Amino acid sequence: MDIVRIACFLERSTYRPGEEGTKAVQDIEFRSAHHLCVETDPALCVPCQERLDRQLALLPRVYGELEAALVPAPHSGDRETGTDRPGIPLNGPAVEARAAVRGTLTSWADLLVEGRTVRLPLRTVPALAAFLRRHLGWLAVHPAAEDAAAEIDTVLRRSLYALHRTPCPVAG
Image (cartoon, rainbow, N blue to C red):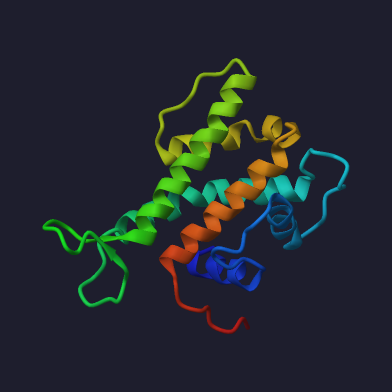
């Protein structure tokens, strides 16, 4: 599935940048796209685990595309940071999205290492995402599973939005 179609799917759901708000809103947004988990159980249901697995599989690719978007094309209209200083102008949203992806994956991998007797992988986005996918069963029953799912969902949505800041075509 290509990133543009995924971005369009996510855009048709309830996410809008800056509106993620409270944890309750994040949980509703994460769970609203499909099956609802039982509210009293902190574990993720199988459909939620599958969605989180797909998102973790997609994040390294999105991260790579954000790298290509770091330097805006001339006259692209992208917001640039550091334009008053000499050097390479950078696409601010792409820089922020990449930092958020790496930070989010690192924090959840750190939690996993603290809770299990496993070694932390390299701190690259592909290695961190693969590590979380390998240990998804453990993470899915952790008391913070819903937080992990909501944060990874939000960071993916923000990253896709940074890549494709134009409205999606009408779904057919």
